[in-house]
Image: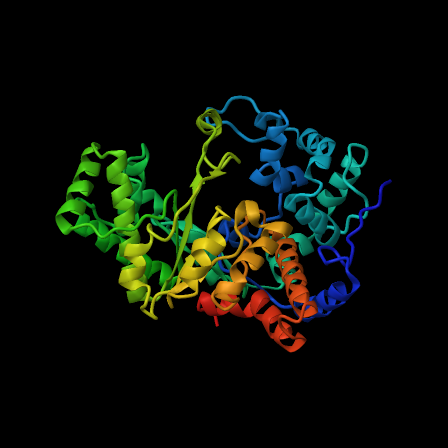
Length: 471
């Protein structure tokens, strides 16, 4: 047996001075509640509170971080239990899936996925041996037995993880039936929706009309005009807010913003209804709708998030066979200064707007994003995101934005995960990396220890609550 070790000084600088300070700072925040303002956990998990399935279905099958790495090494998604759209055969033996995962677990060494899984195995499931080909079935059986216990039901884990609030991501046409069930239950966990209307903005996509039909169903009326469309969005935002939502989210390839004339946007919407809209019209429509979302956020107080720069489903063959979000989203070069000029010049000075920006293009941190956030009152920088939600990625983020924007123009941390059992691992990693960054600042006498104590609390807990108005 190879022991699984979770070192108490993980992610800290080996220099004894920095490590000592990092330990002290981390100790002050390690037990703070978890605030999750952005994520993708299915609310049905907490609404139903049914026992999690066996380990492969819980940990491997739904996690694109895991199967994208395995796919890169030639393992077919069917072999991992990921179901094709056409219903063709797929591996259904959970033990075989888990064994295949264990056979290739070494691939995750040095990656954030490996760091998260190590924490998850050790702290959540009490595993004390490394996952290998030889240990695969022992680890599987250990987790499977735990998942049958009431202490491992979703709500019990939510409470054990000390989650103060968890935000999901929900389409404009979502009924929020699971959120309603949670709120009407006798459980006190706070799970809130986030309004994400991307699908009804993408007017050139094959499924746009189906998305619009879903919006019409929940609104209870047809949407034959652009004016009715805006009315529907405002009503849905109000409903989401009644259900506890504090934020909206917008994933765009390019964060271009432009206010179109009423005539132009109406004409584009009419083209979409006829099925004749172009890619360029979709681009302009999304740009205009970002302006509209900012306007609505000023009026209803919802925090606006923009997640740009991901070329979604780059592997067309994989997307056609398995659907979206199968680990083939790739970052692209992203420009913010010109693209956001219209939005920030119109609304960026308004204290009623809270706009949180993310990026997958690290070259923009110090060149564009930190200077923008260091000027516009409405703007905050989201944490290192997705491919950079990692030890070195978080460190680079702090190094590149702090000198220009400080920490108080950043939005704290969010885990952005679908993998519910990994939530505490992700927050712990972030707190340790931030403690280490501040320890370096103290060791070099850039800040003093008193400042660092305040700052680590803000980074771990305070900033996210202020940014997302969760206080």
